[in-house]
Image 1: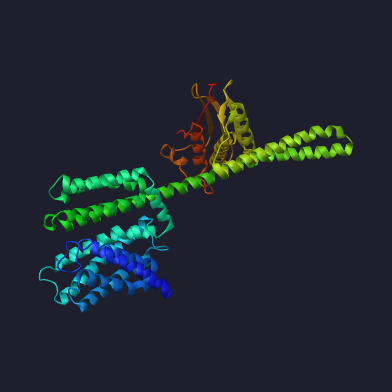
Image 2 (image 1 turned 120 degrees about the vertical axis):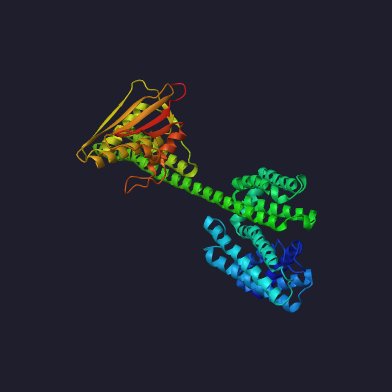
Length: 521
């Protein structure tokens, strides 16, 4: 690291550390920096964690300067150097442990990372507090009988300070974290939540009277609200507001009238609750986004198979018409070429339309609704089944009620659903009885407004306990399956205002229900 950059960073860090030390120097034990709230260690830990232990000399200098400028080095310069070395070494160990454990990057975006962060900070600050108090005791600067209370106050102060402040510093150090805070700041709901937390703190410290710690549970409600709605970024904001409110409440009351250690212990409990809740909300949101992307890609893959089949037909027709044109030219029957060319153009446009719809699906996930007759759907099921059972002894029967109204649907997507259901039926029958089996596709009225297409087979069927599980993503009964076909099929059915369910029976049976086109029902 260049010396100029090192000095520039130190020039920014030192004033910030001094400011935090000065602001948090409340309710000290004697003239020393033994207070129930110490946010400045979080700044030191975050700087050493993100920048490296090379910044330890600057941290040592800032700690020494803060003790001299703010408290006048009450134990003398020699003891001040010892305590500064103790604190710098302790904060350096915390940063070193977190750097090794929070890999690949020092962040708090998962429950594992947050748990490791807490598991390092809480016991480490207890050891640092014991070492600090031990130095003062060994040099004769601690009053008799105050060692335990001094250790507890220093430990709570450092632990709360790091737990509240360090997550904020680590999150805003990354672009993704800064974007999350910007998003939170743009929501009107966030300001309502902050106002509610502030009002709750005022009620606790001023409105109800008495011991504020007895009413601190009231803060949990707005805290949970903001963490659930905004994730880790919202939780950090809420915790910061609560800590600031507690500090202001302490300043407004006499120190003797408030149980400060108890209040800070409650703040620590609130902080852990909010951080864990916020991280779980973020993890769940990331998992949902990942699942949606996986389902979309799976749907695209499944649909690509159906579209490949549809494109194959016009391409085959184009080939046949092209050969017919060549034969006509060889025979000198050029007058008939115009009609053949028109048919080639029509088939090319049909193939282009199919490809265009695939492109739209990839870009926007859009669908193309059109009037689709039930007879066409049944014919598609018959054609697909015939292709799949051509080399097997499985028999296929397709039938439907007369005069069924058309449906308004994306033809390719509904055909994809039928393809999945028929494919599953064929595979179930062949696996259960290699000697042969039966598959039936029937279309009837479910009611006056809905069409019911039933795909049944002579396979073993779906057990009652698995009737919903088979529609979950990545659940497959086939060794080579991804478990996405039925999940995608149900999503398509529901997007059309219908349903797809597995009926519990001694044989395989799936019911696809779709609404008729309005005006034809």
